Image (cartoon, rainbow, N blue to C red):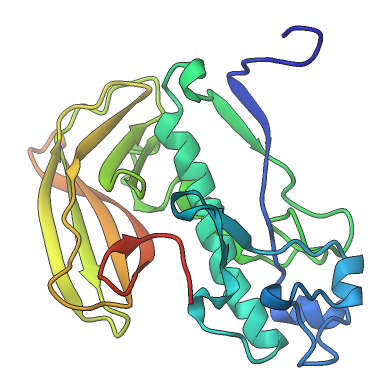
Length: 283
C-alpha cells in the first residue's frame, strides 16, 4: 500500500449486491399497500417510501454492447404489480449472488495480481433495519433469493456419504468461458476420477440435450480443474434454457463397492434474436 491509495489484497473483506425481501415482508414494511406503485427503471422512477428504505435497482451495464443498460427485472417480462416485481427480483438476487461467489471460487487459487482471493466475506448477511439492499435475511429473518444464490454459489446441492468425501468440492459452470469447473478448496487431493454432465432443459421441463463424459482426474488440493468448452443447444430457437451441471465421483470402499457422491448446480440463460447465447438478460 502506498499512502493509503493503492493495494493488492489477497483477501476480499467486503462483497455484496442488491437484495429484495419476499412479498410478505414488503407488505409488513408498508411497501405493498398500493399494488401498482413499484420502481420502473425505464422511467427512472422509485416510489418515495422505497427510496427511504434504500432501494437499489437491478440495472447493469453490458460491457460487450457499448455499456448498454440492462434491466434485470424486465428479463422475465414487465411486472404488473408489486408482488410480480418482488418475484422477479428474487430470481435476479439468486442469480447475481450465485455468479458472485462462483466467480471468486473460479479465481481463488490464481495469483493475487490476476484477481485471486484466498477468502471473501459477505457484507452483510442481515440488515440492521428494514432496508432494500445488502442482506441474505430480511429484518424479520426471512430468507431471500440472495441466500439461495449464496448457497448454490458456495457449495450447490450435494449428497455425501459419512466419510465427508467431497465436502470441499464445488462443481460449477463458468458462464464467461462455458467450461465446467471442479473447485477443490480442501488441503487434500480429491483422489477419485470424477465425471461431470450437463443437461439442458426447456422452460416446460423437456430435455433438449445431454452431455456426459466430462472427466476430471484426481484433483490437486486448492486448485480448479476445467473441462473443454461445452456445447450449447442451437438447433432450435429457444428463448430460455436451463442447464443442470452434475458431478458423479465413484468411490470404492473396503468392501469393494462403488458409491456415488452427487453434486449439482442449476443455471438459466437466454438467447437473442439471432440465437446467440447471452447470460445477461433483456426483455
